[in-house]
Length: 416
Ligand SMILES: *[C@@H]1O[C@H](CO)[C@@H](O)[C@H](O)[C@H]1NC(C)=O
Ligand SMILES: *[C@@H]1O[C@H](CO)[C@@H](O)[C@H](O)[C@H]1NC(C)=O
Ligand SMILES: *[C@@H]1O[C@H](CO)[C@@H](O)[C@H](O)[C@H]1NC(C)=O
Ligand SMILES: *[C@@H]1O[C@H](CO)[C@@H](O)[C@H](O)[C@H]1NC(C)=O
Ligand SMILES: *[C@@H]1O[C@H](CO)[C@@H](O)[C@H](O)[C@H]1NC(C)=O
Ligand SMILES: *[C@@H]1O[C@H](CO)[C@@H](O)[C@H](O)[C@H]1NC(C)=O
Ligand SMILES: *[C@@H]1O[C@H](CO)[C@@H](O)[C@H](O)[C@H]1NC(C)=O
Ligand SMILES: *[C@@H]1O[C@H](CO)[C@@H](O)[C@H](O)[C@H]1NC(C)=O
Ligand SMILES: *[C@@H]1O[C@H](CO)[C@@H](O)[C@H](O)[C@H]1NC(C)=O
Ligand SMILES: *[C@@H]1O[C@H](CO)[C@@H](O)[C@H](O)[C@H]1NC(C)=O
Ligand SMILES: *[C@@H]1O[C@H](CO)[C@@H](O)[C@H](O)[C@H]1NC(C)=O
Ligand SMILES: *[C@@H]1O[C@H](CO)[C@@H](O)[C@H](O)[C@H]1NC(C)=O
Image (cartoon, rainbow, N blue to C red; front, side):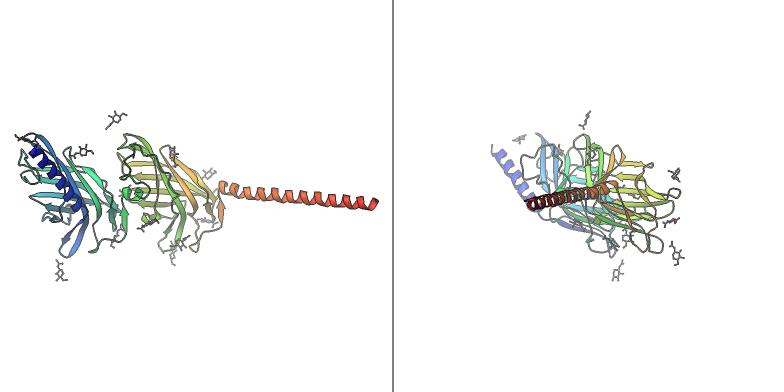
Protein backbone atom coordinates (compact mmCIF):
# COMPACT_ATOMS: atom_id res chain seq x y z
CA UNK A 1 0.00 0.00 0.00
CA UNK A 2 2.77 2.39 1.03
CA UNK A 3 4.80 1.47 -2.03
CA UNK A 4 1.86 2.08 -4.29
CA UNK A 5 1.22 5.48 -2.84
CA UNK A 6 4.85 6.49 -3.20
CA UNK A 7 4.86 5.22 -6.72
CA UNK A 8 1.77 7.25 -7.59
CA UNK A 9 3.25 10.34 -5.97
CA UNK A 10 6.42 9.81 -7.99
CA UNK A 11 4.46 9.72 -11.22
CA UNK A 12 2.61 12.90 -10.29
CA UNK A 13 5.85 14.62 -9.44
CA UNK A 14 7.39 13.52 -12.75
CA UNK A 15 4.34 14.77 -14.62
CA UNK A 16 4.44 18.06 -12.77
CA UNK A 17 8.14 18.52 -13.43
CA UNK A 18 7.51 17.53 -17.02
CA UNK A 19 4.89 20.24 -17.36
CA UNK A 20 7.19 22.77 -15.78
CA UNK A 21 10.01 21.81 -18.12
CA UNK A 22 7.75 21.51 -21.14
CA UNK A 23 6.71 25.12 -20.71
CA UNK A 24 10.31 26.16 -21.32
CA UNK A 25 11.67 25.44 -24.74
CA UNK A 26 15.40 24.72 -24.75
CA UNK A 27 17.65 26.25 -27.41
CA UNK A 28 20.27 24.25 -29.30
CA UNK A 29 22.75 25.42 -31.87
CA UNK A 30 25.05 23.41 -34.13
CA UNK A 31 27.98 25.32 -35.52
CA UNK A 32 30.79 24.61 -37.89
CA UNK A 33 33.67 26.92 -37.08
CA UNK A 34 31.95 30.30 -36.83
CA UNK A 35 28.86 29.57 -38.86
CA UNK A 36 25.61 28.23 -37.48
CA UNK A 37 23.92 25.55 -39.56
CA UNK A 38 21.16 24.31 -37.23
CA UNK A 39 19.32 26.22 -34.56
CA UNK A 40 16.42 24.73 -32.65
CA UNK A 41 14.20 25.90 -29.82
CA UNK A 42 11.97 23.12 -28.68
CA UNK A 43 10.19 21.33 -25.91
CA UNK A 44 10.04 17.58 -25.99
CA UNK A 45 8.58 14.95 -23.75
CA UNK A 46 9.04 11.22 -23.87
CA UNK A 47 6.75 8.37 -23.05
CA UNK A 48 8.67 5.13 -22.70
CA UNK A 49 7.48 1.73 -21.68
CA UNK A 50 10.08 -0.66 -20.23
CA UNK A 51 10.24 -3.96 -18.38
CA UNK A 52 10.50 -4.34 -14.66
CA UNK A 53 10.54 -7.49 -12.54
CA UNK A 54 6.76 -7.18 -12.09
CA UNK A 55 5.84 -6.39 -15.68
CA UNK A 56 5.98 -3.27 -17.81
CA UNK A 57 6.07 0.29 -16.53
CA UNK A 58 5.58 3.49 -18.47
CA UNK A 59 7.54 6.64 -17.66
CA UNK A 60 6.80 10.09 -18.92
CA UNK A 61 9.46 12.77 -18.69
CA UNK A 62 10.36 16.02 -20.39
CA UNK A 63 13.58 17.05 -22.04
CA UNK A 64 15.32 18.85 -19.15
CA UNK A 65 16.58 22.40 -19.55
CA UNK A 66 20.06 21.05 -18.80
CA UNK A 67 20.04 19.20 -22.14
CA UNK A 68 22.95 20.23 -24.37
CA UNK A 69 24.15 19.82 -27.91
CA UNK A 70 26.07 16.56 -28.17
CA UNK A 71 29.53 16.33 -29.69
CA UNK A 72 28.33 14.02 -32.45
CA UNK A 73 26.22 16.85 -33.86
CA UNK A 74 27.45 17.99 -37.24
CA UNK A 75 26.77 20.43 -40.03
CA UNK A 76 27.40 17.66 -42.50
CA UNK A 77 29.00 18.06 -45.87
CA UNK A 78 29.55 15.79 -48.81
CA UNK A 79 27.37 12.76 -48.28
CA UNK A 80 27.02 13.37 -44.55
CA UNK A 81 23.72 14.98 -43.60
CA UNK A 82 23.48 17.70 -40.94
CA UNK A 83 22.50 16.31 -37.56
CA UNK A 84 21.45 17.76 -34.25
CA UNK A 85 22.18 15.52 -31.28
CA UNK A 86 20.83 16.58 -27.91
CA UNK A 87 22.35 14.84 -24.90
CA UNK A 88 20.64 14.80 -21.54
CA UNK A 89 20.48 12.98 -18.23
CA UNK A 90 22.51 9.85 -17.65
CA UNK A 91 23.47 8.95 -21.21
CA UNK A 92 20.28 9.71 -23.13
CA UNK A 93 20.32 11.36 -26.55
CA UNK A 94 17.75 12.62 -29.01
CA UNK A 95 18.92 13.08 -32.61
CA UNK A 96 17.40 14.77 -35.65
CA UNK A 97 18.92 14.17 -39.08
CA UNK A 98 18.07 16.65 -41.84
CA UNK A 99 17.95 16.43 -45.62
CA UNK A 100 17.11 18.99 -48.25
CA UNK A 101 16.38 19.47 -51.88
CA UNK A 102 16.20 22.64 -53.93
CA UNK A 103 13.20 24.04 -52.07
CA UNK A 104 12.69 22.26 -48.81
CA UNK A 105 14.54 20.85 -45.91
CA UNK A 106 13.09 18.21 -43.67
CA UNK A 107 13.79 16.02 -40.70
CA UNK A 108 14.57 12.74 -42.39
CA UNK A 109 14.89 10.80 -39.20
CA UNK A 110 14.37 11.08 -35.49
CA UNK A 111 16.11 8.77 -33.08
CA UNK A 112 16.37 8.32 -29.35
CA UNK A 113 18.96 6.52 -27.32
CA UNK A 114 18.05 5.84 -23.71
CA UNK A 115 19.95 4.22 -20.95
CA UNK A 116 17.88 1.80 -18.86
CA UNK A 117 20.58 1.66 -16.19
CA UNK A 118 19.51 5.18 -15.19
CA UNK A 119 17.36 4.06 -12.28
CA UNK A 120 16.19 7.59 -11.50
CA UNK A 121 14.42 7.72 -14.83
CA UNK A 122 13.64 4.03 -15.15
CA UNK A 123 12.99 2.75 -11.61
CA UNK A 124 13.26 -1.03 -11.15
CA UNK A 125 14.18 -1.61 -14.77
CA UNK A 126 15.03 -5.26 -15.29
CA UNK A 127 17.51 -4.35 -17.98
CA UNK A 128 20.47 -1.98 -17.93
CA UNK A 129 20.92 -1.83 -21.68
CA UNK A 130 21.20 1.23 -23.89
CA UNK A 131 18.24 1.12 -26.26
CA UNK A 132 18.14 2.89 -29.64
CA UNK A 133 14.92 3.54 -31.51
CA UNK A 134 14.41 5.45 -34.72
CA UNK A 135 11.80 6.52 -37.23
CA UNK A 136 12.03 8.10 -40.62
CA UNK A 137 8.34 9.01 -40.72
CA UNK A 138 8.43 12.64 -39.73
CA UNK A 139 6.19 15.43 -40.91
CA UNK A 140 8.69 18.15 -40.13
CA UNK A 141 9.49 20.03 -43.32
CA UNK A 142 9.96 23.66 -44.25
CA UNK A 143 11.07 25.88 -47.08
CA UNK A 144 14.79 26.54 -47.25
CA UNK A 145 15.74 29.88 -45.68
CA UNK A 146 12.69 29.77 -43.44
CA UNK A 147 12.13 28.81 -39.83
CA UNK A 148 9.98 25.77 -39.16
CA UNK A 149 7.40 26.75 -36.56
CA UNK A 150 5.08 24.39 -34.74
CA UNK A 151 3.81 25.57 -31.38
CA UNK A 152 1.15 22.86 -31.29
CA UNK A 153 2.24 19.55 -29.93
CA UNK A 154 3.10 16.80 -32.32
CA UNK A 155 3.64 13.20 -31.33
CA UNK A 156 5.98 10.88 -33.10
CA UNK A 157 6.13 7.19 -32.42
CA UNK A 158 9.68 5.86 -32.55
CA UNK A 159 8.69 2.32 -31.70
CA UNK A 160 5.82 0.60 -29.91
CA UNK A 161 7.58 1.40 -26.62
CA UNK A 162 8.63 4.99 -27.29
CA UNK A 163 6.69 8.13 -28.18
CA UNK A 164 8.15 11.62 -28.40
CA UNK A 165 5.96 14.71 -28.25
CA UNK A 166 7.39 17.97 -29.56
CA UNK A 167 5.90 21.37 -28.87
CA UNK A 168 6.90 25.05 -29.05
CA UNK A 169 9.21 24.19 -31.92
CA UNK A 170 11.08 26.82 -33.86
CA UNK A 171 14.00 25.53 -35.81
CA UNK A 172 16.00 25.93 -38.94
CA UNK A 173 18.65 23.86 -40.69
CA UNK A 174 20.84 24.82 -43.64
CA UNK A 175 21.02 28.31 -42.21
CA UNK A 176 22.69 31.26 -43.89
CA UNK A 177 23.06 33.45 -40.82
CA UNK A 178 23.37 33.02 -37.10
CA UNK A 179 19.73 33.87 -36.38
CA UNK A 180 16.52 32.06 -37.20
CA UNK A 181 14.95 33.41 -40.39
CA UNK A 182 12.03 35.75 -39.79
CA UNK A 183 10.29 34.00 -42.67
CA UNK A 184 8.37 31.05 -41.23
CA UNK A 185 7.00 27.75 -42.46
CA UNK A 186 4.10 27.08 -40.13
CA UNK A 187 3.03 23.49 -39.52
CA UNK A 188 -0.54 22.59 -40.42
CA UNK A 189 -1.55 22.04 -36.79
CA UNK A 190 -0.75 25.68 -36.02
CA UNK A 191 -2.71 26.86 -39.02
CA UNK A 192 -5.93 25.28 -37.83
CA UNK A 193 -5.42 26.01 -34.14
CA UNK A 194 -7.38 29.25 -34.36
CA UNK A 195 -10.48 27.66 -35.85
CA UNK A 196 -10.68 24.64 -33.56
CA UNK A 197 -10.32 24.39 -29.81
CA UNK A 198 -9.46 20.72 -29.57
CA UNK A 199 -7.83 20.43 -26.16
CA UNK A 200 -10.44 22.35 -24.18
CA UNK A 201 -13.56 20.50 -25.21
CA UNK A 202 -13.90 17.04 -23.70
CA UNK A 203 -16.68 16.35 -26.20
CA UNK A 204 -14.42 16.52 -29.24
CA UNK A 205 -15.52 13.55 -31.28
CA UNK A 206 -13.38 11.21 -33.32
CA UNK A 207 -14.62 12.44 -36.70
CA UNK A 208 -14.22 16.21 -36.83
CA UNK A 209 -16.85 17.81 -39.04
CA UNK A 210 -15.07 19.73 -41.78
CA UNK A 211 -14.96 23.45 -41.14
CA UNK A 212 -15.71 25.30 -44.38
CA UNK A 213 -12.55 27.10 -45.39
CA UNK A 214 -12.60 30.84 -45.93
CA UNK A 215 -11.89 31.93 -49.50
CA UNK A 216 -8.17 31.83 -50.16
CA UNK A 217 -6.09 34.98 -50.19
CA UNK A 218 -5.34 36.34 -53.63
CA UNK A 219 -1.76 35.73 -54.74
CA UNK A 220 0.20 37.97 -57.09
CA UNK A 221 2.48 35.73 -59.15
CA UNK A 222 4.72 37.13 -61.86
CA UNK A 223 7.24 35.39 -64.10
CA UNK A 224 9.95 37.50 -65.68
CA UNK A 225 12.07 36.78 -68.72
CA UNK A 226 15.86 36.99 -68.87
CA UNK A 227 15.73 40.80 -68.95
CA UNK A 228 13.59 41.15 -65.87
CA UNK A 229 10.47 42.17 -67.76
CA UNK A 230 7.25 40.48 -66.74
CA UNK A 231 6.08 37.93 -69.30
CA UNK A 232 3.44 36.02 -67.32
CA UNK A 233 1.07 37.65 -64.86
CA UNK A 234 -1.35 35.92 -62.53
CA UNK A 235 -3.52 37.25 -59.74
CA UNK A 236 -5.60 34.55 -58.10
CA UNK A 237 -6.72 32.82 -54.96
CA UNK A 238 -6.31 29.04 -55.17
CA UNK A 239 -7.93 26.28 -53.17
CA UNK A 240 -6.75 22.72 -53.75
CA UNK A 241 -9.00 19.74 -53.24
CA UNK A 242 -7.26 16.37 -53.02
CA UNK A 243 -9.01 13.07 -52.42
CA UNK A 244 -6.61 10.72 -50.71
CA UNK A 245 -6.33 7.96 -48.15
CA UNK A 246 -6.17 9.34 -44.63
CA UNK A 247 -3.59 7.75 -42.39
CA UNK A 248 -5.41 8.64 -39.17
CA UNK A 249 -8.95 7.75 -40.26
CA UNK A 250 -7.94 4.79 -42.46
CA UNK A 251 -10.37 5.84 -45.19
CA UNK A 252 -10.57 8.03 -48.26
CA UNK A 253 -11.11 11.71 -47.53
CA UNK A 254 -11.31 14.92 -49.58
CA UNK A 255 -8.99 17.49 -48.10
CA UNK A 256 -9.31 21.12 -49.12
CA UNK A 257 -6.42 23.51 -48.60
CA UNK A 258 -5.89 27.16 -49.41
CA UNK A 259 -2.62 28.07 -51.07
CA UNK A 260 -1.08 30.78 -48.91
CA UNK A 261 0.48 33.41 -51.16
CA UNK A 262 3.04 34.57 -48.63
CA UNK A 263 4.39 31.04 -48.31
CA UNK A 264 4.31 30.32 -52.02
CA UNK A 265 7.12 30.88 -54.46
CA UNK A 266 6.42 31.25 -58.15
CA UNK A 267 8.76 30.16 -60.91
CA UNK A 268 8.27 29.20 -64.50
CA UNK A 269 9.06 30.04 -68.07
CA UNK A 270 7.57 32.03 -70.91
CA UNK A 271 7.59 31.02 -74.51
CA UNK A 272 5.52 30.26 -77.56
CA UNK A 273 3.50 28.12 -77.80
CA UNK A 274 3.91 27.12 -74.15
CA UNK A 275 4.32 29.01 -70.90
CA UNK A 276 4.49 27.46 -67.44
CA UNK A 277 3.81 28.73 -63.96
CA UNK A 278 5.03 26.63 -61.05
CA UNK A 279 3.83 27.42 -57.55
CA UNK A 280 5.61 25.83 -54.61
CA UNK A 281 4.37 25.83 -51.08
CA UNK A 282 5.99 23.81 -48.29
CA UNK A 283 4.20 20.59 -49.00
CA UNK A 284 2.76 21.23 -52.44
CA UNK A 285 4.06 21.80 -55.96
CA UNK A 286 1.62 22.92 -58.60
CA UNK A 287 2.42 23.46 -62.27
CA UNK A 288 0.16 25.20 -64.78
CA UNK A 289 0.94 24.94 -68.49
CA UNK A 290 -0.64 27.42 -70.88
CA UNK A 291 -0.71 26.80 -74.62
CA UNK A 292 -1.11 29.30 -77.41
CA UNK A 293 -2.86 28.13 -80.56
CA UNK A 294 -1.65 30.42 -83.30
CA UNK A 295 -4.33 29.17 -85.72
CA UNK A 296 -7.23 30.15 -83.52
CA UNK A 297 -5.33 33.01 -81.83
CA UNK A 298 -6.48 31.70 -78.45
CA UNK A 299 -4.60 30.57 -75.40
CA UNK A 300 -5.82 28.19 -72.71
CA UNK A 301 -4.77 26.23 -69.65
CA UNK A 302 -3.68 22.96 -71.24
CA UNK A 303 -2.08 21.04 -68.37
CA UNK A 304 -1.98 20.96 -64.58
CA UNK A 305 0.39 18.84 -62.51
CA UNK A 306 0.41 18.50 -58.77
CA UNK A 307 2.65 16.81 -56.29
CA UNK A 308 1.89 17.02 -52.61
CA UNK A 309 2.72 15.32 -49.36
CA UNK A 310 0.29 16.69 -46.81
CA UNK A 311 0.14 15.56 -43.22
CA UNK A 312 -2.06 12.48 -42.91
CA UNK A 313 -1.28 11.30 -46.43
CA UNK A 314 0.11 7.80 -46.58
CA UNK A 315 2.20 8.56 -49.63
CA UNK A 316 3.05 11.28 -52.13
CA UNK A 317 0.06 12.46 -54.12
CA UNK A 318 1.26 12.94 -57.69
CA UNK A 319 -1.27 13.59 -60.44
CA UNK A 320 -1.56 15.51 -63.67
CA UNK A 321 -3.65 16.00 -66.77
CA UNK A 322 -2.11 17.20 -70.00
CA UNK A 323 -5.21 17.45 -72.14
CA UNK A 324 -7.19 20.20 -70.49
CA UNK A 325 -8.90 23.11 -72.14
CA UNK A 326 -9.75 25.60 -69.41
CA UNK A 327 -9.64 29.38 -69.17
CA UNK A 328 -9.70 29.97 -72.92
CA UNK A 329 -9.03 33.55 -74.02
CA UNK A 330 -8.02 35.56 -77.11
CA UNK A 331 -4.32 36.20 -77.47
CA UNK A 332 -3.33 39.74 -76.53
CA UNK A 333 -5.99 39.80 -73.81
CA UNK A 334 -6.03 38.72 -70.18
CA UNK A 335 -8.44 36.14 -68.81
CA UNK A 336 -10.52 37.25 -65.86
CA UNK A 337 -12.96 35.44 -63.61
CA UNK A 338 -14.01 37.04 -60.34
CA UNK A 339 -16.51 34.32 -59.52
CA UNK A 340 -15.38 31.04 -57.99
CA UNK A 341 -14.59 28.49 -60.66
CA UNK A 342 -13.81 24.80 -60.28
CA UNK A 343 -11.18 23.22 -62.50
CA UNK A 344 -11.54 19.43 -62.40
CA UNK A 345 -8.07 18.18 -63.23
CA UNK A 346 -8.50 14.48 -62.42
CA UNK A 347 -11.26 12.78 -60.42
CA UNK A 348 -9.15 12.94 -57.25
CA UNK A 349 -7.88 16.47 -57.72
CA UNK A 350 -9.58 19.77 -58.44
CA UNK A 351 -8.73 23.43 -58.03
CA UNK A 352 -11.15 26.15 -56.99
CA UNK A 353 -10.08 29.55 -58.31
CA UNK A 354 -11.16 32.86 -56.81
CA UNK A 355 -10.81 36.40 -58.20
CA UNK A 356 -8.62 35.24 -61.03
CA UNK A 357 -6.91 37.30 -63.69
CA UNK A 358 -4.08 35.96 -65.75
CA UNK A 359 -2.12 36.51 -68.90
CA UNK A 360 0.56 34.05 -69.96
CA UNK A 361 1.37 35.54 -73.39
CA UNK A 362 1.99 38.94 -75.02
CA UNK A 363 2.44 40.84 -71.75
CA UNK A 364 3.64 44.37 -72.38
CA UNK A 365 4.74 47.05 -69.93
CA UNK A 366 4.32 44.69 -66.92
CA UNK A 367 0.57 45.19 -67.09
CA UNK A 368 -2.49 43.14 -67.88
CA UNK A 369 -4.03 43.76 -71.29
CA UNK A 370 -7.79 44.34 -71.60
CA UNK A 371 -9.69 41.56 -69.87
CA UNK A 372 -11.94 38.95 -71.36
CA UNK A 373 -14.39 37.82 -68.71
CA UNK A 374 -15.49 34.28 -68.02
CA UNK A 375 -19.09 33.21 -68.74
CA UNK A 376 -20.10 33.19 -65.05
CA UNK A 377 -18.96 36.79 -64.61
CA UNK A 378 -20.79 37.83 -67.78
CA UNK A 379 -23.94 36.13 -66.52
CA UNK A 380 -23.49 37.70 -63.10
CA UNK A 381 -23.15 41.05 -64.81
CA UNK A 382 -26.20 40.28 -66.94
CA UNK A 383 -28.44 39.89 -63.88
CA UNK A 384 -28.17 43.54 -62.77
CA UNK A 385 -28.62 44.60 -66.40
CA UNK A 386 -31.79 42.51 -66.71
CA UNK A 387 -33.09 43.72 -63.36
CA UNK A 388 -32.26 47.28 -64.32
CA UNK A 389 -33.93 46.94 -67.69
CA UNK A 390 -37.02 45.39 -66.09
CA UNK A 391 -37.19 48.24 -63.55
CA UNK A 392 -36.79 50.84 -66.30
CA UNK A 393 -39.56 49.12 -68.27
CA UNK A 394 -41.82 49.14 -65.22
CA UNK A 395 -41.18 52.83 -64.61
CA UNK A 396 -41.96 53.55 -68.27
CA UNK A 397 -45.25 51.59 -68.12
CA UNK A 398 -46.33 53.42 -64.95
CA UNK A 399 -45.40 56.74 -66.54
CA UNK A 400 -47.34 55.98 -69.72
CA UNK A 401 -50.34 54.77 -67.71
CA UNK A 402 -50.22 57.97 -65.64
CA UNK A 403 -49.99 60.18 -68.73
CA UNK A 404 -52.87 58.36 -70.43
CA UNK A 405 -54.93 58.58 -67.23
CA UNK A 406 -54.17 62.28 -66.88
CA UNK A 407 -55.15 62.91 -70.51
CA UNK A 408 -58.45 61.03 -70.03
CA UNK A 409 -59.46 62.97 -66.88
CA UNK A 410 -58.40 66.17 -68.60
CA UNK A 411 -60.58 65.25 -71.59
CA UNK A 412 -63.41 64.38 -69.16
CA UNK A 413 -63.31 67.83 -67.57
CA UNK A 414 -63.51 69.47 -70.97
CA UNK A 415 -66.75 67.69 -71.94
CA UNK A 416 -68.55 68.97 -68.83
C1 LIG B 1 36.09 32.74 -36.62
O1 LIG B 1 36.10 34.18 -36.56
C2 LIG B 1 37.29 34.72 -36.08
C3 LIG B 1 37.13 36.24 -35.97
O2 LIG B 1 36.17 36.71 -36.85
C4 LIG B 1 38.43 34.36 -37.03
O3 LIG B 1 39.66 34.86 -36.53
C5 LIG B 1 38.52 32.83 -37.12
O4 LIG B 1 39.50 32.46 -38.07
C6 LIG B 1 37.18 32.25 -37.55
N1 LIG B 1 37.27 30.80 -37.50
C7 LIG B 1 36.81 30.02 -38.48
C8 LIG B 1 36.98 28.57 -38.32
O5 LIG B 1 36.26 30.48 -39.49
C1 LIG C 1 2.54 5.69 -28.11
O1 LIG C 1 1.44 6.18 -28.87
C2 LIG C 1 0.56 5.15 -29.32
C3 LIG C 1 -0.45 5.80 -30.24
O2 LIG C 1 -0.89 7.01 -29.75
C4 LIG C 1 -0.07 4.47 -28.12
O3 LIG C 1 -0.94 3.45 -28.55
C5 LIG C 1 1.02 3.88 -27.27
O4 LIG C 1 0.46 3.32 -26.11
C6 LIG C 1 2.03 4.95 -26.87
N1 LIG C 1 3.14 4.33 -26.20
C7 LIG C 1 3.66 4.83 -25.10
C8 LIG C 1 4.79 4.12 -24.51
O5 LIG C 1 3.25 5.89 -24.61
C1 LIG D 1 7.02 -5.41 -7.49
O1 LIG D 1 7.52 -6.60 -6.89
C2 LIG D 1 8.06 -6.41 -5.58
C3 LIG D 1 8.62 -7.71 -5.10
O2 LIG D 1 9.18 -8.41 -6.16
C4 LIG D 1 6.96 -5.90 -4.67
O3 LIG D 1 7.52 -5.65 -3.39
C5 LIG D 1 6.37 -4.64 -5.22
O4 LIG D 1 5.26 -4.24 -4.46
C6 LIG D 1 5.90 -4.82 -6.64
N1 LIG D 1 5.53 -3.51 -7.20
C7 LIG D 1 4.37 -3.31 -7.78
C8 LIG D 1 4.13 -1.93 -8.30
O5 LIG D 1 3.54 -4.16 -7.98
C1 LIG E 1 18.61 30.62 -49.55
O1 LIG E 1 19.48 31.72 -49.33
C2 LIG E 1 20.74 31.59 -50.00
C3 LIG E 1 21.63 32.76 -49.59
O2 LIG E 1 20.89 33.91 -49.37
C4 LIG E 1 20.51 31.56 -51.49
O3 LIG E 1 21.71 31.37 -52.17
C5 LIG E 1 19.57 30.40 -51.83
O4 LIG E 1 19.25 30.42 -53.20
C6 LIG E 1 18.30 30.50 -51.02
N1 LIG E 1 17.50 29.31 -51.30
C7 LIG E 1 16.17 29.33 -51.50
C8 LIG E 1 15.51 28.04 -51.84
O5 LIG E 1 15.51 30.36 -51.40
C1 LIG F 1 1.57 42.57 -58.25
O1 LIG F 1 2.98 42.68 -58.08
C2 LIG F 1 3.57 43.62 -58.97
C3 LIG F 1 5.07 43.57 -58.81
O2 LIG F 1 5.46 42.98 -57.63
C4 LIG F 1 3.03 45.01 -58.69
O3 LIG F 1 3.58 45.93 -59.60
C5 LIG F 1 1.52 44.98 -58.86
O4 LIG F 1 0.97 46.24 -58.53
C6 LIG F 1 0.89 43.91 -57.99
N1 LIG F 1 -0.53 43.82 -58.31
C7 LIG F 1 -1.49 43.80 -57.37
C8 LIG F 1 -2.89 43.76 -57.81
O5 LIG F 1 -1.20 43.82 -56.18
C1 LIG G 1 16.61 41.59 -73.69
O1 LIG G 1 17.10 42.88 -73.97
C2 LIG G 1 17.92 42.91 -75.15
C3 LIG G 1 18.48 44.30 -75.30
O2 LIG G 1 17.58 45.26 -74.78
C4 LIG G 1 17.08 42.50 -76.35
O3 LIG G 1 17.90 42.49 -77.51
C5 LIG G 1 16.52 41.10 -76.13
O4 LIG G 1 15.66 40.75 -77.19
C6 LIG G 1 15.75 41.07 -74.83
N1 LIG G 1 15.35 39.69 -74.57
C7 LIG G 1 14.13 39.36 -74.19
C8 LIG G 1 13.90 37.92 -73.93
O5 LIG G 1 13.24 40.20 -74.09
C1 LIG H 1 -13.68 18.37 -53.02
O1 LIG H 1 -13.78 17.25 -53.87
C2 LIG H 1 -14.79 16.32 -53.47
C3 LIG H 1 -14.69 15.12 -54.40
O2 LIG H 1 -14.63 15.50 -55.74
C4 LIG H 1 -16.15 16.99 -53.51
O3 LIG H 1 -17.13 16.10 -53.09
C5 LIG H 1 -16.13 18.22 -52.61
O4 LIG H 1 -17.35 18.92 -52.71
C6 LIG H 1 -14.99 19.15 -52.98
N1 LIG H 1 -14.92 20.22 -52.02
C7 LIG H 1 -14.71 21.50 -52.35
C8 LIG H 1 -14.73 22.51 -51.26
O5 LIG H 1 -14.51 21.83 -53.51
C1 LIG I 1 -7.87 -0.04 -42.65
O1 LIG I 1 -9.10 -0.46 -43.18
C2 LIG I 1 -9.03 -1.70 -43.90
C3 LIG I 1 -10.37 -2.01 -44.49
O2 LIG I 1 -11.19 -0.89 -44.59
C4 LIG I 1 -8.58 -2.79 -42.96
O3 LIG I 1 -8.44 -4.00 -43.69
C5 LIG I 1 -7.25 -2.43 -42.37
O4 LIG I 1 -6.87 -3.39 -41.42
C6 LIG I 1 -7.33 -1.06 -41.69
N1 LIG I 1 -5.98 -0.68 -41.24
C7 LIG I 1 -5.74 -0.19 -40.03
C8 LIG I 1 -4.35 0.16 -39.72
O5 LIG I 1 -6.65 -0.04 -39.21
C1 LIG J 1 0.90 35.12 -44.13
O1 LIG J 1 -0.41 35.64 -44.21
C2 LIG J 1 -1.22 35.27 -43.11
C3 LIG J 1 -2.62 35.75 -43.37
O2 LIG J 1 -2.63 37.06 -43.84
C4 LIG J 1 -0.62 35.88 -41.84
O3 LIG J 1 -1.41 35.52 -40.74
C5 LIG J 1 0.78 35.35 -41.67
O4 LIG J 1 1.38 35.99 -40.56
C6 LIG J 1 1.62 35.63 -42.88
N1 LIG J 1 2.90 34.93 -42.73
C7 LIG J 1 4.05 35.49 -43.11
C8 LIG J 1 5.27 34.66 -42.90
O5 LIG J 1 4.11 36.59 -43.60
C1 LIG K 1 8.66 20.29 -55.32
O1 LIG K 1 9.56 20.34 -56.39
C2 LIG K 1 10.92 20.26 -56.01
C3 LIG K 1 11.78 20.46 -57.22
O2 LIG K 1 11.35 19.72 -58.31
C4 LIG K 1 11.12 18.90 -55.36
O3 LIG K 1 12.46 18.76 -54.99
C5 LIG K 1 10.24 18.81 -54.13
O4 LIG K 1 10.38 17.56 -53.52
C6 LIG K 1 8.79 19.01 -54.53
N1 LIG K 1 7.96 19.07 -53.34
C7 LIG K 1 6.74 18.54 -53.29
C8 LIG K 1 5.99 18.68 -52.03
O5 LIG K 1 6.26 17.98 -54.25
C1 LIG L 1 -5.54 24.98 -82.90
O1 LIG L 1 -6.95 24.91 -82.92
C2 LIG L 1 -7.46 24.29 -84.10
C3 LIG L 1 -8.95 24.44 -84.09
O2 LIG L 1 -9.49 24.06 -82.84
C4 LIG L 1 -7.00 22.84 -84.10
O3 LIG L 1 -7.48 22.19 -85.25
C5 LIG L 1 -5.49 22.80 -84.08
O4 LIG L 1 -5.05 21.46 -83.99
C6 LIG L 1 -4.95 23.60 -82.91
N1 LIG L 1 -3.51 23.69 -83.03
C7 LIG L 1 -2.69 23.34 -82.08
C8 LIG L 1 -1.23 23.51 -82.32
O5 LIG L 1 -3.10 22.90 -81.00
C1 LIG M 1 1.31 37.59 -79.36
O1 LIG M 1 2.59 36.98 -79.40
C2 LIG M 1 2.72 36.05 -80.46
C3 LIG M 1 4.05 35.36 -80.30
O2 LIG M 1 5.05 36.23 -79.85
C4 LIG M 1 2.62 36.78 -81.78
O3 LIG M 1 2.73 35.88 -82.83
C5 LIG M 1 1.25 37.47 -81.84
O4 LIG M 1 1.17 38.25 -83.01
C6 LIG M 1 1.02 38.35 -80.64
N1 LIG M 1 -0.36 38.77 -80.67
C7 LIG M 1 -0.79 39.95 -80.24
C8 LIG M 1 -2.23 40.24 -80.38
O5 LIG M 1 -0.02 40.75 -79.75
